[in-house]
Length: 229
Image 1 (cartoon, rainbow, N blue to C red):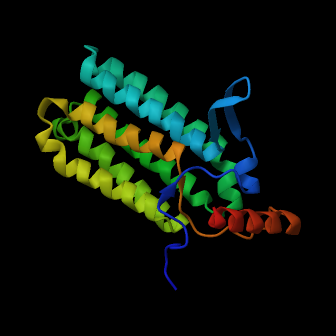
Image 2 (image 1 turned 60 degrees about the horizontal axis):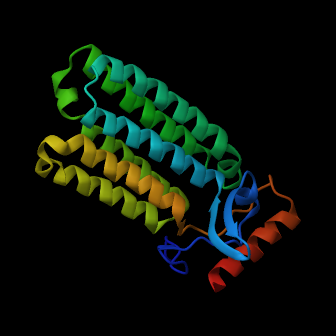
């Protein structure tokens, strides 16, 4: 039996046959003109986590690349944004990871963000030159570790590919010269925002005591509907 779920495509258009844990806190954006549906977007709480981190990381790295702000001021702003993002991630994802029995993923990503934040601040405030020179590979590497672990937890090829893209980003950084922060922001934020807009592959729904028998059956039926589409 394959570790990954080969019955689902790597990525595809989002499906509306969602599980109980995805329906909790679902954000729907619909734009209609008369009977014409111009825009229809669905964002589960996990998608919302991707969007939050996508905007945070994009803002951080674009600021570092283009705005003439002191490193100390940027470090303070980065710290506030990173801590806010970590707290938001934990709140939004908690019910989902409990149902999927993946609470350790929230702890892992929080730890990775705090490690990166701590090293970045040490590099800036304690003048650790080697750290300052490696900020972009540091954050790409931490993100890659997070994606590989997420891939293992979800049995998802999509997140495995996301991790490989970040490793490729590290390999290509020497060719970006003075645009390394912008390139890093594009890779990290672009991956996150892309994941928020598609449905990625993962293992079948998890049976958990948090859901009733009826809810577990509902999830299995929704899973079969997604496979059929």
